[in-house]
Length: 195
Image (cartoon, helix red, strand yellow):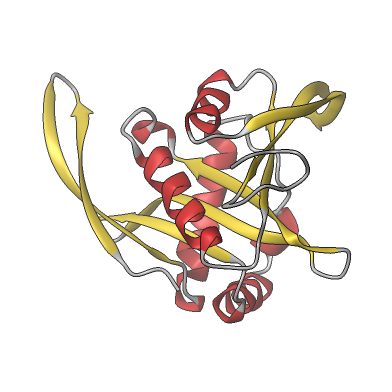
C-alpha cells in the first residue's frame, strides 16, 4: 500500500505562476466516476495513450470492480493525483500475466495536458518503482509510442532501457504508429542486467 503524500508544483495560469498542492494516493473504488472522467479527458487531449481501458470506462460498475481488484492486489496498484478534489493524473502497475510470469510488472502513466512538465510524471514513476521494489516483481516493462519523446526521456531518466520496437503496432483513428518496449530490472541481477 502507498501512503497518501502531498506535493507542491508551480502551475502556469496565464502570465502568473502559482503554487498548487497535489495529493498523490492510491485509487479507491469510490473514485470510479472521477477516474472515468479523467480517462475520458486524457483520451480527448492526447493520442499518446496506448492502453485500452475503453470497456472498463464505459461501464462504471466494471470500473469499480477493477479498482476493487487493484485495492486487493499485493503486486499491482493504481495511483491518482488529486488537485482541489479533481483527478489530474494516474499511474498503474500491474502484474503482466500472473500465471506465466508473476515477476513482470507493466507500467502506465497519464497526466492531463495542463500539467505536463510540472514533475507529476516523475513523481508517479518514482512512486511506482518504490512500490514495485517492495513486491516480488523483478522487472518493470512498458510500451510507449515512438513519437512520445517526452515520455521516453522520462522513462530513461528512471533507468528504463529500450528492448524492442514494434512497427505500425497501434492503430488510432485509422493511423498506425510504431511503439517502443522498455524495461527496468529491479533490485538485483536478472536476465544479464545489473540493477
